[in-house]
Image (cartoon, rainbow, N blue to C red; front, side):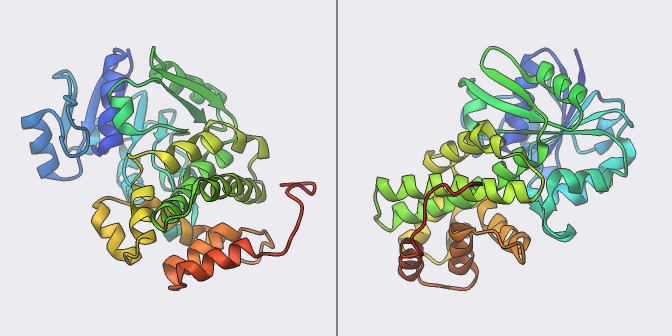
Length: 335
């Protein structure tokens, strides 16, 4: 049995807490807001986030971040924009060799759009061993014990294997992975493609268009991933094509839901507001645009999404430009 704290009580934080407690670990959940703590204390669940899921009474709740002291594993399950600020507060409570499991997906705008593991590492000042847990996994389904496979990616093999042993069970399969850069980038960029697929569906395009966006999206993810130091092969796995598929087609996907509304004519900011939760693909689009500047890498879908979301380019014009790009082979060396 391990002592584990989960920092964040959103859908993922609660789903993972239930999973870990079910695996026999001593689990404490940290809540950022007092009202979140009160709701979970009284209801032992959050019907809006995870309908029908109740937390076992053995799971402890707190608003005191010192719960992370002496933990074998600390799970960071806050929105991407809050990773850096949360880590700054968390640092004093983390043991040097503790394992930090990052569930958040995206980029840190305040640090030049670096990957979140890099932001977490910087904020921790050398404390903790970081593992990104990522792949095709909706919190709603993990909480309901739906069979799921995911990767624990880290530069530290021992840390990745510890996470594997802590999380893995009869419905939740965990693979270890050495390419944390590629695994994280796949988890972040697939949100852009899910937005694009949602927009395509909302605008009335067909399955052919959806397949085009998903497969050419993988090509873009691979190009940028290699440029940033990741391995091309990573994007053919769970954190690449696997996460892309589940986010592009699932009814649980916030990015796809926002895209559907945009495709139907709703302004991007209004669509995000209506979703009522963080739409990571919107922020990832801005980050990828920034990271690709001056790189010479072709990212036509990502750049088209940037023009549509941030520069107000009409959807029809964007679609025509994408389909009428210069003819070329699908493969010409590096994808």
